[in-house]
Length: 452
Image 1: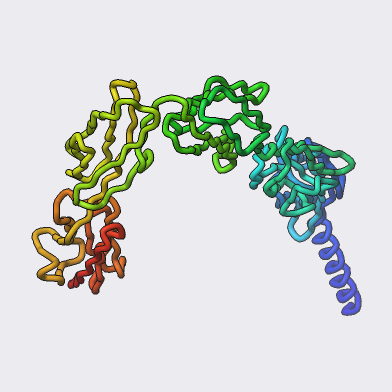
Image 2: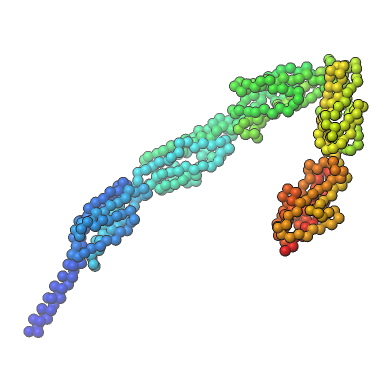
């Protein structure tokens, strides 16, 4: 009897275990699904001995439970590289999983038509829209890229060096991905240049018209400050310039320059030098001192006219700005103030005249420095506080002295900083302030002490 009881208990235990195993069973109709890059959905059949639940690995996968025997799996379009994910179906202690793989997008785009650079070169970017492996198949030797291959979207950095070519340079960069390739043209503009047929032209004192030929791959502009050279016509198609040279009535050889400058780059230019000889077959009047004269002395001085073939040598003198300089009828000039002034002489009998421009920069005897209300010449130390601002005033004696080149320096800008003619105290410390005029050969230094 005892033996039969043991056999019965063993049989019941086995039946109980089998029943437990059957309760924890789940099966699905597929273990792997592969999608293209556009995504889609499928139905999965489910057999389970009990209620089931699921877990998803991959945020691009969505599961919709239709019933206990069926569910819908939806996969989003893929705009990245190849990917895979999992759905775990769980019924108590039993689990089944579905692996989902999806191909990458077949997009391969470079949304740029042409890369353009000036002759100076530079850097730019080339966006690549791609979700697979890609690489640079070829590129012109004067084009550089930061990398030669990659995977997925990338912004390629392109560098082009400065060019010496006087013609436009055309190249390309070709990108390859999965047997598909895209070529992007790269264009670098020509380096501008200007070259004269002759760099020096000589003409006699009678003057007249002359033609100047030049070569250039750029538009040019002309700079002409000469009073005796006139631009008559500029033909930009044939690159021809017609100049009128006035007759030389000064009885000294003269030289002046016209500058040909490229519009694209003002640092690229070519000077044309024009030399004109002396004309002596008619009455003429000029200054021995030339066209311009620099003046720094306060003492009166005499200008020296020179003339040729003049029966009547009487002259009329005139100052065009008597506030700057005066002149008497003997040619004695007295500087009044710093500035520029023209002096002319005229012979009415021969109807000829000449002019000279005086550039007057009068010397100073001394320089006084005022910092606010403080005279720094008598008290060369100023004590101030952080944040305080003071006006620096320079007084030259005499008052009409030249002051155009006065400069200010601070030995310690972290303590005292100069902005224009103002001194701003920054932080505690000491700084030496120097006021200097190279023309006047005057310099003065004082000290500022900034305290908290």
